[in-house]
Length: 482
Image (cartoon, rainbow, N blue to C red; front, side):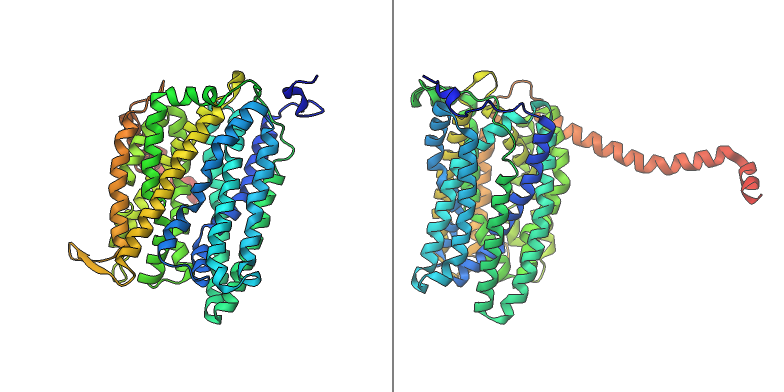
């Protein structure tokens, strides 16, 4: 009788060509990034407004991508016991992105009373598929990409996706600004076409991954749930990491949709300008910073980058209060400073999870780390959505106050709560243990040295040119004249 390992495929997988695999993963993400930036941009907020979404539910809408994590634990168990890692992420991945075609059809096939409930329901279904896919694909990435280059490779991977995302965002907002003055019917048609096109691009992401074989993972038909999750939960450092991620997500889950509403409604920005402020410019800043953070992660470790990055993001939410219609740019610069720090936090967190999820040497608990982390993030994200929605609903659209002489709306109260929660995330980072990682001060010293070296180059290069010119003497001028 064939074993579960041999029965997964009739033929053994072809040998892994690492360079080809890295290239395919990079190209595939260009399609995936176009899908992601389109479906998480101001287009979703505009679509929700057209469908009549009540104020409370914007917080829930912002946290819905996280609730699907309830599927991460059973998926992790299935992968550890039966395998089929590649099949799981391909089927689940193409399935959850195809749901956006159904979201695009909502205003054309349902009665108006069902529009916004259908949006929430389908968005939740898409989230479920995303979390079925996530433990499989990240564990697979960890086995395909060599450990020594992951920080640099995924910084380039992220930068490529951000460039594509910027282009997608600019195109989408151009069409939205064209459609909005022409009435709600034209706007709805434009939004539906946008989501349908994004869905097709999202599916193309997974089609590009088809030729890459599954490697490194061996299922164990005897494994139990207790055995699978015992190792991660016994790891004190990992428990601190879960607490950090949960607290961080509690500060973020509701934030995105209310920032879009603040910039669009309170600042009176167009769709294009809203996307520029909330998505395009921060993405450009992140794009420029990602390479530096990736090198720091490879050179110094994940923990020191997490510590410095978490300090740098605390002020980011409350800084939006300073972004006012009369004086928008001073506060916006403070927001962008936190974006640089968020890039480091994301890079370090992503690489830390890849290290924990690898299956090399027959290790089977890798996907369990991912699943537990997903559940912690999801629980905090769902709670965050309820928190944000409750505060917004309690205060109401017309609530106004003041803070240190600055006008304050219900959005501002939500921004203050978000920054306060980020402070609570900081102690958990210091409790992390990462073997071989440098001290956080090494990150600061490395950055200062790099800045100093660059400044010296800028200053000394003209001086060297003058010195060389002086050494040539008057004869050089004569030769030139000749």
